[in-house]
Image (cartoon, rainbow, N blue to C red; front, side, top):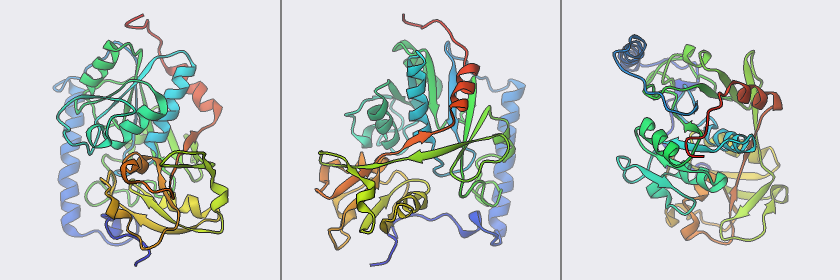
Length: 335
């Protein structure tokens, strides 16, 4: 068995290295850049209209493709908003769900294949209303009708039709912007300058540059998928485990476990992978540690030795003070 599972589509080497970029990728990136630049100008000129909601909107997103830590930050943001007296709701596209054309309310018990793995995780961790809809404006209006007085848009930085009050860019502290090129020549959805225009820039791991807020993903326990008492992650130190990650940047999860002294046998899957029991035919019954996002899709066939590793986003208190200070307060739409 190879050390790393081969089921995952790996980004091209040149995205995150100095390797030469193929000519065809550079040509397609130029076309892509022209199209997204034209779209941005049409919104600035008012040809394409932005829609404002009746309550404040906070967008959490990233300029690059792949995972940067948006979901843990969204969960932490929702929790802070509730502590501050708000009634937040989360709008998401629900990428990877069976019918992305159908709007849906997502609850803790919603099957991930219907609601999307990240929206189900957010609903379970926060208990706030979560609405999935390709149209974020429609999702926001549904949340307002449900009594929410602030809308948090998960992964909506490029959804320009929804006017927003606060934009938060999340940056992967290990990979940052890769080679700095637009898709498909590099990992950028938009030029790097787009991130600089956001109200807050959050760095997930690594050393923050000027204007960036540091975020650390903290975990100290593993939760058995079949229920029971959490097990301290430190208790796995010195052992070999199968580590499973179907997220945008699996290596971050593997490195975090290794940093705790755990012997990792890594198994990387595509982001939003729809797991089946046979995906876990690893040939041994070592403990299986997986991200919380993966775990929501594996309960039906979980074994006693399958564990979820939940994380929580930790940022400086000054970040939360600054964010809440910028957030306009409105009367609740449904007191």
